[in-house]
Length: 203
Image 1: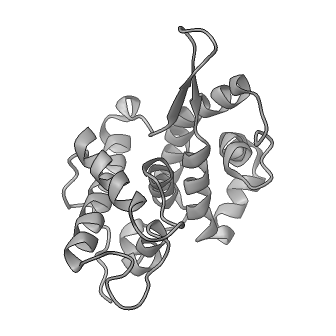
Image 2: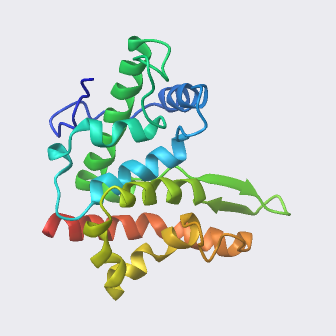
């Protein structure tokens, strides 16, 4: 099966809210429990872009695209109902991926990850919860564990990655954390990602 590859010169228009909803719904309606939702997808793509020692353009699409929909199934194009639906999903994913990279490079302070938000006990309180996002990010880490190991072991970068491990790891420290603690960890992720992007660019 042929898969497209990430091309830094391709369309980098951010997905509209409608397109993000379409992609989320498309993935949610696939006949598999393994497909990522839009939050996990956003984190997964961020992790792919930040993987140390590698240019994403050099990574074959077959190495990461099927992870998004839980793997390919027989007969082709399962789990999609048609080749057209598969192509649409791939196009939207690649555009979103490129838009993240473009935002980090050109307007980093305007970038916002896709998190869940929940209302607190009073009307004026809203808690961020990046658990799904962090799970997706760690799935990208699992594709290149040896490359990521030094960043998790080195204190400065380990501190940047700690909220993600705490929220998204199977034994994460915040798996049963309070809403306040999860909110604090979640809100630290955007600045941590931008710091890791600077490190990645220098590498």
